[in-house]
Image (cartoon, rainbow, N blue to C red; front, side, top):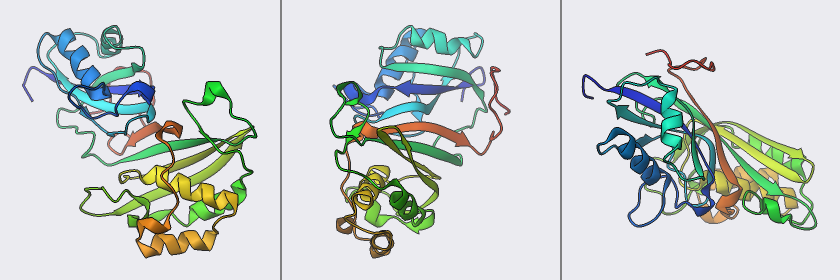
Length: 263
């Protein structure tokens, strides 16, 4: 990094319906592409961000993370306002602050939290269509909760990732799985140290099958041990998935409203 630059971390929120995921792609709208364009205009030079989680097309985020190196001399918290004035309505920077110059959002240890939301009612609600997966049959959330505990810990999640994954290892650590209900909406909260391609959506699809009574807790255990993608449930639609939080080991207790984190 240039000696005059400072590394700025952006907490990014977006509504993913009309975005082709986070990672930059030619000729289509992506979160990374829109951030690069806004920051380049702000800094008056070409700027490229480094993102923490490269979410898929249609996936939402309450808090994703991106960093870039700035040459501007403005207060850290002002970056959020300056960048937001140049971004489309479906992307917003919620906070901005300085981090260490060598901080890399994909190479530092962190825990990510995803929530998959199911609308579990007799009739679909149109205003929730962009953010939920509609399941009209009754779901047993207690059975889903028990089955989810089978997945907690460090395991080979080959059964729960896309066959198109390019990861060298399919071993990942899931730190918790929680199934909860709020009226007609059922949430599947999955926390982990890292996820494979489509992993959370396949976990959600498998637990929904448990909720329907199609498979059991023991079936989920056998699916995990089989390392066979064809044994697990479907990859449910992206619209129900939201990345809600990322917590980094390097500043685990940081939750204030100040402009910088320890570095």
